[in-house]
Image (cartoon, rainbow, N blue to C red; front, side, top):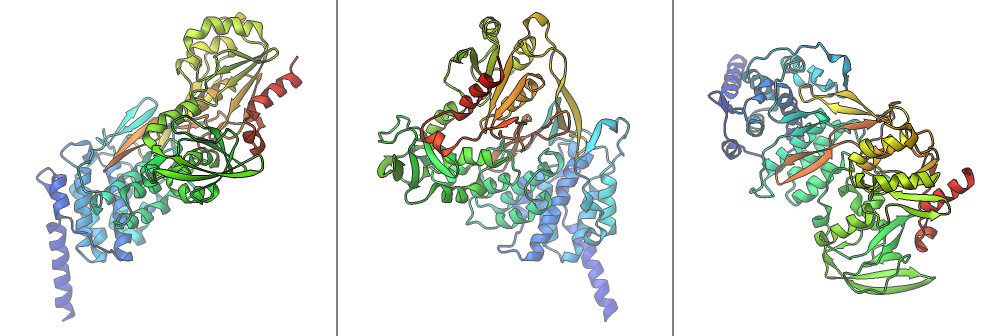
Length: 565
């Protein structure tokens, strides 16, 4: 009897391994065919979730390592649906055999040439593939061998000189509650980060622990895809990531600009889109009876941020999101509490105003802010200003460069400023460039300042750089270059911690920006998440915001007056 039962099981296994196949001839089924055949459980149990999580990891690892995915005849998305269907239709004990057979059917491959690996650094060893207890001996050996495969030119990632690009299919006309595509989106994003993101090892939670939560959440149709994706991409702790928190929390906004200090929210600009009695410096006590600090805790999981400074920067906007046309604002002024009803506007129409206020500082390009001290906002400086800048730097020996905005021109740091601030060629930053053809690794690229072409132009005075949470990406890059000047003092508060180039990944329903290359100081200090190095920490205070004072600028002026002749 036992022999007969064993024979039937073997027949069933063999039949299963041949019946559940994604390939048709030398290529994959279409995504439509694979999707139509996929049978997903309505409420998966814990074992099914574990199997889907593991298969999602296997699929992503193979997608980026196997040369079969250099061919346009192999559709990785269709393969994912087929593989899911295969493992969900059979006993859990057969999962590893099915995955082994799938890898085998993708074809043979050559082992890559390891010459030239001296400049390669590994950030992900993919140690899980050696777990033979979890994977079984055959599957584990297949994956470990595949790690050294020559993937050729994978069709889903493309190398660029300072970054890489993700090349994915857009799926826009699909139901938003389609669990199959939700699973595909989760698996795509998690594996892209696992194989190529410089933030992979910088997240608050170990990246290995993230996948299971969002695979399970993808089955919960009560969670909209905007909420699913926003929470998932926020796990990367990357300020460059664009989130969909605006529609999640209402799509309308009270048109005020506010800033947090000491866990309190203050009005920094009353705007003019709707009438109101608020003034700059008023403290917002509640918005429809909800305290700003409580709103922050509600919003935090949906808002990508490299650090707490960026969270406060962005939540100061998001606290004002609403679904209502009119909102009750309670605020404090001069010890008295007032209540006002403010109309809301469509949030998307207000975004441009917010950007201009934060990143395009409305000041003259060259301004004497105190006796003998000239101020330059980086958001206004262009190469066309060279003649005026040369005259200004000749007249003054104390300089404040405000990097609390976005640079007007990238060429300023390489073609305008070097003649005045860089006496020598120095390494300003080291870039971690993920390698498309070798997942889990990056190459180092040194970025150097350009030496002045005319030493007589060099500025010989003291320089203060102003930074805060609005110092992001290119502004952080500029800061690191200027910090190679020995006369520079950096003053302010923590920056955005999103320095490297941006790349974009397309998921079902949506696409997201993410940091594509890591940035470190020459000594190895990571600028990702941390932000730039700061010599003098000056945080905005509640008292300063209440009175509309730029405390960082004032601190810079005081420093120059006290330390420079």
